[in-house]
Length: 378
Image (tube, rainbow, N blue to C red; front, top):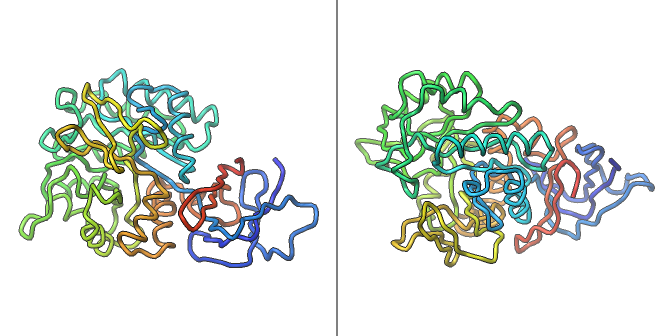
Protein backbone atom coordinates (compact mmCIF):
# COMPACT_ATOMS: atom_id res chain seq x y z
CA UNK A 1 0.00 0.00 0.00
CA UNK A 2 1.46 3.33 -1.01
CA UNK A 3 2.16 6.15 1.39
CA UNK A 4 0.43 9.51 1.29
CA UNK A 5 0.19 12.67 3.36
CA UNK A 6 -2.76 14.89 4.18
CA UNK A 7 -1.92 18.58 4.51
CA UNK A 8 -3.71 21.90 4.84
CA UNK A 9 -6.22 20.62 7.39
CA UNK A 10 -7.08 21.53 10.94
CA UNK A 11 -5.88 18.39 12.68
CA UNK A 12 -7.67 16.99 15.70
CA UNK A 13 -5.46 14.14 16.90
CA UNK A 14 -7.85 12.80 19.54
CA UNK A 15 -6.48 15.09 22.23
CA UNK A 16 -5.65 18.47 20.74
CA UNK A 17 -6.16 20.58 17.65
CA UNK A 18 -2.99 21.27 15.65
CA UNK A 19 -2.38 23.67 12.79
CA UNK A 20 0.18 23.44 10.00
CA UNK A 21 0.74 19.71 10.40
CA UNK A 22 0.79 16.91 7.85
CA UNK A 23 -0.43 13.39 8.62
CA UNK A 24 1.60 10.70 6.89
CA UNK A 25 -0.13 7.36 6.24
CA UNK A 26 1.84 4.28 5.28
CA UNK A 27 0.62 0.68 4.91
CA UNK A 28 -2.73 1.43 6.51
CA UNK A 29 -1.28 3.01 9.66
CA UNK A 30 -0.49 6.51 10.81
CA UNK A 31 3.23 6.78 10.15
CA UNK A 32 3.98 10.31 11.35
CA UNK A 33 2.65 13.74 12.18
CA UNK A 34 5.10 16.37 10.97
CA UNK A 35 5.41 19.89 9.68
CA UNK A 36 4.06 20.06 6.16
CA UNK A 37 7.25 21.79 5.03
CA UNK A 38 9.35 18.71 5.85
CA UNK A 39 7.51 16.20 3.64
CA UNK A 40 9.62 14.42 1.02
CA UNK A 41 9.04 15.52 -2.57
CA UNK A 42 8.01 12.08 -3.81
CA UNK A 43 5.08 11.45 -1.43
CA UNK A 44 1.50 11.81 -2.65
CA UNK A 45 -0.05 14.87 -1.02
CA UNK A 46 -3.78 15.24 -0.38
CA UNK A 47 -5.03 18.80 0.18
CA UNK A 48 -7.32 18.96 3.20
CA UNK A 49 -8.83 22.19 1.88
CA UNK A 50 -8.74 23.78 5.32
CA UNK A 51 -11.25 21.25 6.68
CA UNK A 52 -11.06 19.35 9.99
CA UNK A 53 -9.12 16.09 9.94
CA UNK A 54 -10.19 13.83 12.81
CA UNK A 55 -10.13 10.21 13.95
CA UNK A 56 -12.88 8.15 12.36
CA UNK A 57 -16.11 7.87 14.32
CA UNK A 58 -17.04 4.64 16.13
CA UNK A 59 -20.68 3.61 16.57
CA UNK A 60 -21.48 0.69 18.87
CA UNK A 61 -25.23 0.64 18.13
CA UNK A 62 -26.26 0.46 14.46
CA UNK A 63 -29.49 -1.39 13.69
CA UNK A 64 -29.48 -0.48 10.04
CA UNK A 65 -28.76 1.98 7.26
CA UNK A 66 -28.98 2.36 3.53
CA UNK A 67 -32.50 0.94 3.55
CA UNK A 68 -31.44 -2.27 5.33
CA UNK A 69 -32.23 -3.54 8.82
CA UNK A 70 -29.76 -6.12 10.15
CA UNK A 71 -32.65 -8.27 11.41
CA UNK A 72 -33.96 -8.51 7.84
CA UNK A 73 -30.57 -9.05 6.19
CA UNK A 74 -28.25 -10.88 8.62
CA UNK A 75 -25.71 -11.64 5.90
CA UNK A 76 -22.42 -10.20 4.71
CA UNK A 77 -24.03 -8.17 1.91
CA UNK A 78 -26.48 -6.58 4.34
CA UNK A 79 -23.67 -5.71 6.73
CA UNK A 80 -21.59 -4.17 3.94
CA UNK A 81 -24.54 -2.04 2.83
CA UNK A 82 -25.21 -0.78 6.36
CA UNK A 83 -21.53 0.10 6.82
CA UNK A 84 -21.37 1.89 3.45
CA UNK A 85 -24.39 4.03 4.35
CA UNK A 86 -22.87 5.15 7.65
CA UNK A 87 -19.39 5.71 6.29
CA UNK A 88 -20.74 8.68 4.34
CA UNK A 89 -21.37 10.30 7.73
CA UNK A 90 -17.97 9.64 9.25
CA UNK A 91 -18.37 6.18 10.79
CA UNK A 92 -15.22 4.13 10.23
CA UNK A 93 -15.92 1.38 12.79
CA UNK A 94 -19.20 -0.07 13.99
CA UNK A 95 -21.03 -2.87 15.73
CA UNK A 96 -23.96 -3.95 13.54
CA UNK A 97 -26.80 -4.36 16.02
CA UNK A 98 -29.43 -7.10 16.10
CA UNK A 99 -32.67 -6.17 17.79
CA UNK A 100 -34.43 -8.88 19.86
CA UNK A 101 -35.04 -11.86 17.58
CA UNK A 102 -35.30 -15.64 17.47
CA UNK A 103 -32.32 -17.91 18.07
CA UNK A 104 -31.75 -18.75 14.39
CA UNK A 105 -31.60 -15.06 13.50
CA UNK A 106 -29.05 -14.45 16.27
CA UNK A 107 -26.91 -17.28 14.92
CA UNK A 108 -27.18 -15.92 11.37
CA UNK A 109 -26.15 -12.44 12.46
CA UNK A 110 -23.16 -13.68 14.46
CA UNK A 111 -22.06 -15.87 11.55
CA UNK A 112 -22.44 -12.98 9.10
CA UNK A 113 -20.33 -10.67 11.27
CA UNK A 114 -17.70 -13.42 11.56
CA UNK A 115 -17.65 -13.72 7.76
CA UNK A 116 -17.42 -9.93 7.36
CA UNK A 117 -14.46 -9.70 9.74
CA UNK A 118 -12.73 -12.70 8.12
CA UNK A 119 -13.27 -11.13 4.68
CA UNK A 120 -11.81 -7.82 5.85
CA UNK A 121 -14.98 -5.80 5.34
CA UNK A 122 -13.83 -2.30 6.32
CA UNK A 123 -15.19 -0.99 9.58
CA UNK A 124 -16.81 -4.10 11.04
CA UNK A 125 -15.30 -4.74 14.46
CA UNK A 126 -17.93 -6.94 16.12
CA UNK A 127 -21.63 -7.29 16.86
CA UNK A 128 -24.12 -5.80 19.30
CA UNK A 129 -26.96 -8.10 20.40
CA UNK A 130 -29.61 -5.80 21.85
CA UNK A 131 -31.78 -8.43 23.48
CA UNK A 132 -33.51 -10.81 23.68
CA UNK A 133 -32.69 -11.02 27.40
CA UNK A 134 -34.60 -7.89 28.33
CA UNK A 135 -37.43 -6.82 30.64
CA UNK A 136 -40.79 -6.51 28.89
CA UNK A 137 -41.69 -3.65 31.26
CA UNK A 138 -39.16 -1.52 29.35
CA UNK A 139 -39.34 -3.22 25.95
CA UNK A 140 -39.68 -0.16 23.73
CA UNK A 141 -40.23 -1.50 20.20
CA UNK A 142 -38.72 -4.89 21.02
CA UNK A 143 -41.21 -7.73 20.61
CA UNK A 144 -42.58 -8.90 23.95
CA UNK A 145 -43.29 -12.28 22.33
CA UNK A 146 -39.60 -12.87 21.62
CA UNK A 147 -38.06 -11.39 24.79
CA UNK A 148 -37.10 -14.39 26.89
CA UNK A 149 -34.90 -15.62 29.73
CA UNK A 150 -31.33 -16.60 28.89
CA UNK A 151 -31.08 -20.15 27.58
CA UNK A 152 -28.78 -22.68 29.25
CA UNK A 153 -26.34 -22.56 26.32
CA UNK A 154 -26.60 -18.80 25.70
CA UNK A 155 -23.05 -18.09 26.90
CA UNK A 156 -21.70 -20.45 24.23
CA UNK A 157 -23.66 -18.54 21.58
CA UNK A 158 -22.61 -15.13 22.87
CA UNK A 159 -18.93 -16.09 22.87
CA UNK A 160 -18.91 -17.69 19.42
CA UNK A 161 -17.37 -14.72 17.56
CA UNK A 162 -13.67 -15.51 17.38
CA UNK A 163 -12.00 -12.22 16.45
CA UNK A 164 -14.40 -9.34 17.09
CA UNK A 165 -16.07 -7.57 19.96
CA UNK A 166 -19.41 -8.82 21.29
CA UNK A 167 -21.69 -6.37 23.10
CA UNK A 168 -24.82 -7.71 24.76
CA UNK A 169 -27.58 -5.44 26.02
CA UNK A 170 -29.63 -7.14 28.72
CA UNK A 171 -31.79 -6.47 31.76
CA UNK A 172 -29.50 -7.38 34.70
CA UNK A 173 -32.42 -8.01 37.03
CA UNK A 174 -33.59 -10.79 34.71
CA UNK A 175 -30.23 -12.61 34.71
CA UNK A 176 -29.26 -15.38 37.10
CA UNK A 177 -26.55 -14.47 39.58
CA UNK A 178 -23.11 -15.01 38.07
CA UNK A 179 -24.26 -14.75 34.45
CA UNK A 180 -22.74 -11.32 33.84
CA UNK A 181 -19.54 -12.45 35.55
CA UNK A 182 -19.34 -15.48 33.22
CA UNK A 183 -19.81 -13.28 30.16
CA UNK A 184 -17.34 -10.64 31.33
CA UNK A 185 -14.74 -13.33 32.05
CA UNK A 186 -15.03 -14.32 28.38
CA UNK A 187 -14.55 -10.71 27.22
CA UNK A 188 -18.20 -10.12 26.31
CA UNK A 189 -19.12 -6.47 26.88
CA UNK A 190 -22.35 -6.39 28.90
CA UNK A 191 -24.56 -3.30 29.04
CA UNK A 192 -27.78 -2.70 30.93
CA UNK A 193 -30.68 -1.72 28.71
CA UNK A 194 -34.43 -2.21 28.41
CA UNK A 195 -34.34 -2.72 32.14
CA UNK A 196 -36.64 -1.97 35.07
CA UNK A 197 -33.86 -2.70 37.54
CA UNK A 198 -33.23 -0.89 40.79
CA UNK A 199 -30.08 0.91 41.86
CA UNK A 200 -29.11 -2.17 43.88
CA UNK A 201 -29.65 -4.46 40.86
CA UNK A 202 -27.21 -2.32 38.90
CA UNK A 203 -24.64 -2.26 41.68
CA UNK A 204 -24.69 -6.05 41.73
CA UNK A 205 -24.29 -6.17 37.94
CA UNK A 206 -21.38 -3.73 38.02
CA UNK A 207 -19.81 -5.92 40.68
CA UNK A 208 -19.98 -8.84 38.25
CA UNK A 209 -18.23 -6.86 35.52
CA UNK A 210 -21.00 -5.09 33.61
CA UNK A 211 -19.31 -2.51 31.39
CA UNK A 212 -21.95 0.05 30.55
CA UNK A 213 -25.46 1.25 29.74
CA UNK A 214 -27.32 1.25 26.45
CA UNK A 215 -28.95 4.55 25.36
CA UNK A 216 -28.91 6.29 28.74
CA UNK A 217 -32.37 7.38 29.99
CA UNK A 218 -34.25 5.46 27.29
CA UNK A 219 -35.91 2.16 28.20
CA UNK A 220 -34.62 2.15 31.77
CA UNK A 221 -35.95 3.03 35.23
CA UNK A 222 -35.53 6.78 35.73
CA UNK A 223 -33.68 8.59 38.47
CA UNK A 224 -35.57 9.88 41.48
CA UNK A 225 -34.08 11.28 44.64
CA UNK A 226 -34.90 8.22 46.78
CA UNK A 227 -34.50 5.47 44.18
CA UNK A 228 -31.76 6.47 41.71
CA UNK A 229 -32.84 3.69 39.36
CA UNK A 230 -30.78 2.55 36.41
CA UNK A 231 -30.30 6.09 35.08
CA UNK A 232 -29.01 7.34 38.42
CA UNK A 233 -26.75 4.34 38.90
CA UNK A 234 -25.34 4.91 35.41
CA UNK A 235 -24.45 8.54 36.05
CA UNK A 236 -23.08 7.92 39.54
CA UNK A 237 -20.65 5.16 38.58
CA UNK A 238 -17.19 6.27 37.46
CA UNK A 239 -16.06 3.02 35.86
CA UNK A 240 -18.80 2.27 33.35
CA UNK A 241 -19.67 3.79 29.98
CA UNK A 242 -22.99 5.26 28.84
CA UNK A 243 -24.25 5.41 25.27
CA UNK A 244 -26.18 8.58 24.51
CA UNK A 245 -28.46 9.32 21.54
CA UNK A 246 -28.03 13.03 20.83
CA UNK A 247 -30.79 13.64 18.29
CA UNK A 248 -32.95 16.04 20.32
CA UNK A 249 -35.78 13.49 20.48
CA UNK A 250 -34.55 10.66 22.70
CA UNK A 251 -33.20 12.91 25.45
CA UNK A 252 -33.92 16.59 26.16
CA UNK A 253 -30.86 18.81 25.68
CA UNK A 254 -30.96 19.81 29.36
CA UNK A 255 -30.88 16.15 30.42
CA UNK A 256 -28.04 15.55 27.97
CA UNK A 257 -26.08 18.35 29.60
CA UNK A 258 -26.79 17.04 33.10
CA UNK A 259 -25.64 13.54 32.16
CA UNK A 260 -22.47 14.71 30.42
CA UNK A 261 -21.59 16.93 33.38
CA UNK A 262 -22.39 14.23 35.93
CA UNK A 263 -20.67 11.26 34.37
CA UNK A 264 -16.96 10.69 34.86
CA UNK A 265 -14.81 12.16 32.10
CA UNK A 266 -14.37 9.86 29.13
CA UNK A 267 -17.33 7.64 29.93
CA UNK A 268 -20.06 9.08 27.70
CA UNK A 269 -20.05 7.81 24.11
CA UNK A 270 -22.26 8.91 21.26
CA UNK A 271 -24.35 6.24 19.57
CA UNK A 272 -26.90 6.50 16.79
CA UNK A 273 -29.27 3.55 17.40
CA UNK A 274 -29.71 4.06 13.66
CA UNK A 275 -32.44 2.47 11.59
CA UNK A 276 -32.52 1.70 7.81
CA UNK A 277 -33.55 5.29 7.01
CA UNK A 278 -30.03 6.64 7.59
CA UNK A 279 -28.43 7.15 4.19
CA UNK A 280 -31.63 6.06 2.43
CA UNK A 281 -34.14 7.98 0.33
CA UNK A 282 -36.99 5.86 1.69
CA UNK A 283 -37.87 7.04 5.17
CA UNK A 284 -40.24 4.14 5.92
CA UNK A 285 -39.52 0.57 7.00
CA UNK A 286 -41.19 -2.29 8.83
CA UNK A 287 -40.17 -3.78 12.18
CA UNK A 288 -42.08 -6.67 13.72
CA UNK A 289 -44.92 -6.14 11.27
CA UNK A 290 -45.37 -2.47 12.17
CA UNK A 291 -44.50 0.45 9.93
CA UNK A 292 -41.99 2.96 11.25
CA UNK A 293 -41.63 6.37 9.65
CA UNK A 294 -38.78 8.87 10.01
CA UNK A 295 -40.08 12.45 10.01
CA UNK A 296 -37.72 15.39 10.56
CA UNK A 297 -35.12 12.93 11.87
CA UNK A 298 -37.50 11.24 14.32
CA UNK A 299 -38.18 7.49 13.88
CA UNK A 300 -41.48 6.39 15.40
CA UNK A 301 -44.46 4.07 15.22
CA UNK A 302 -47.86 5.47 14.32
CA UNK A 303 -48.64 5.92 18.04
CA UNK A 304 -45.53 8.06 18.50
CA UNK A 305 -43.36 5.42 20.20
CA UNK A 306 -39.72 6.08 19.36
CA UNK A 307 -38.22 3.28 17.29
CA UNK A 308 -34.49 3.75 16.97
CA UNK A 309 -33.27 6.86 15.22
CA UNK A 310 -32.60 8.55 11.89
CA UNK A 311 -29.32 9.83 13.33
CA UNK A 312 -25.80 9.55 11.94
CA UNK A 313 -22.55 10.02 13.86
CA UNK A 314 -21.35 13.33 12.41
CA UNK A 315 -24.81 14.78 13.10
CA UNK A 316 -24.54 13.54 16.69
CA UNK A 317 -21.24 15.43 16.97
CA UNK A 318 -22.83 18.54 15.48
CA UNK A 319 -25.79 18.28 17.88
CA UNK A 320 -23.44 17.99 20.86
CA UNK A 321 -21.79 21.24 19.84
CA UNK A 322 -24.85 23.20 18.74
CA UNK A 323 -27.61 21.74 20.94
CA UNK A 324 -25.73 20.98 24.15
CA UNK A 325 -22.81 23.43 23.99
CA UNK A 326 -20.05 20.82 24.10
CA UNK A 327 -16.62 21.85 22.79
CA UNK A 328 -15.91 20.26 19.38
CA UNK A 329 -12.87 18.32 20.54
CA UNK A 330 -14.83 16.71 23.38
CA UNK A 331 -17.74 15.92 21.05
CA UNK A 332 -15.29 14.18 18.70
CA UNK A 333 -13.79 12.21 21.60
CA UNK A 334 -17.31 11.14 22.59
CA UNK A 335 -17.73 9.82 19.05
CA UNK A 336 -14.33 8.18 18.66
CA UNK A 337 -11.85 7.84 21.52
CA UNK A 338 -14.37 7.02 24.24
CA UNK A 339 -16.18 4.28 22.28
CA UNK A 340 -12.77 2.92 21.26
CA UNK A 341 -11.86 2.72 24.94
CA UNK A 342 -15.17 1.05 25.78
CA UNK A 343 -14.44 -1.56 23.09
CA UNK A 344 -10.86 -2.01 24.34
CA UNK A 345 -9.61 -0.87 20.93
CA UNK A 346 -8.09 2.43 22.05
CA UNK A 347 -4.60 1.16 21.27
CA UNK A 348 -5.65 0.98 17.60
CA UNK A 349 -8.45 3.53 17.09
CA UNK A 350 -9.68 6.86 18.36
CA UNK A 351 -6.50 8.84 17.79
CA UNK A 352 -4.40 10.11 14.94
CA UNK A 353 -1.00 9.07 16.24
CA UNK A 354 1.91 6.97 14.95
CA UNK A 355 1.08 3.27 14.97
CA UNK A 356 -2.69 3.75 15.04
CA UNK A 357 -4.97 2.51 12.26
CA UNK A 358 -5.37 5.13 9.57
CA UNK A 359 -9.11 5.50 10.27
CA UNK A 360 -9.61 9.18 9.59
CA UNK A 361 -12.20 11.60 8.28
CA UNK A 362 -12.28 15.06 6.75
CA UNK A 363 -15.31 17.25 7.36
CA UNK A 364 -16.15 20.84 6.53
CA UNK A 365 -17.58 23.66 8.63
CA UNK A 366 -21.13 22.44 8.00
CA UNK A 367 -20.25 18.95 9.31
CA UNK A 368 -20.34 17.37 5.86
CA UNK A 369 -17.91 14.43 5.71
CA UNK A 370 -16.05 14.96 2.46
CA UNK A 371 -13.52 12.09 2.60
CA UNK A 372 -12.81 9.10 4.79
CA UNK A 373 -10.14 6.41 5.10
CA UNK A 374 -10.35 3.04 6.86
CA UNK A 375 -6.97 1.40 7.36
CA UNK A 376 -5.61 3.96 4.94
CA UNK A 377 -8.02 3.09 2.12
CA UNK A 378 -10.65 5.47 0.77
